[in-house]
Amino acid sequence: MQCEGLVVRLMFLFVVCFCYLVDSQQTMEETILVGDDLMMGPPSPLIPPEIASHVLEGVDLCDGILRNLFLCLQINDIEPFCQDEIALYRQCAERRDKELRQRLQDSEQKLELSTPLDQAKERATQLESEVTLLERRLILASGAEGMDGFRQRWSLHGSLTDTKNRLEALKGTIRFSI
Image 1: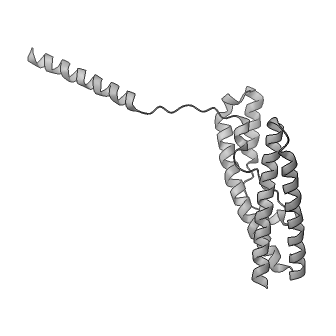
Image 2 (image 1 turned 90 degrees about the vertical axis):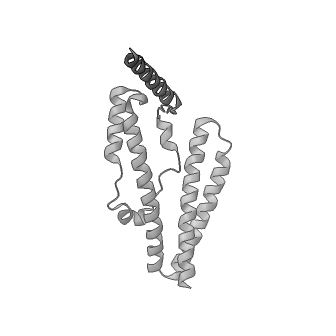
């Protein structure tokens, strides 16, 4: 009789402890990714045609994953059923864009080291005017409302940031050459 009472008490303690552990664990909210989640962070960099061939060489462009995402959306018609594809594309695009930005800066520096100083200064002037134009377009886009305005500002801000980084890489090379 005493043994049965002890077993019942131990089982009761086990249930109480188990319920406490389950209740004390933090619950993770489920997040449903949508297409707009792919617009987090800067947009993909624009690659100038004169250096595109060796910048893009060997880079995973995520086209297979993107094709699978489009196929999933075509079959299922809504984003909640394509969570894996959206997450995979997002990760791949972030890796790709980081690698492309680094390769773009490296290629810009190599290109400028191989060109005469006058041409490098001319290119710097061209990039400075492109920065000015993008800044003006960004100011004009600040008046656009809604999702279209957001997309314009997002795209322009990414282009402006990439162009400024290219200009800084070029100026560093010019300073090094002088």
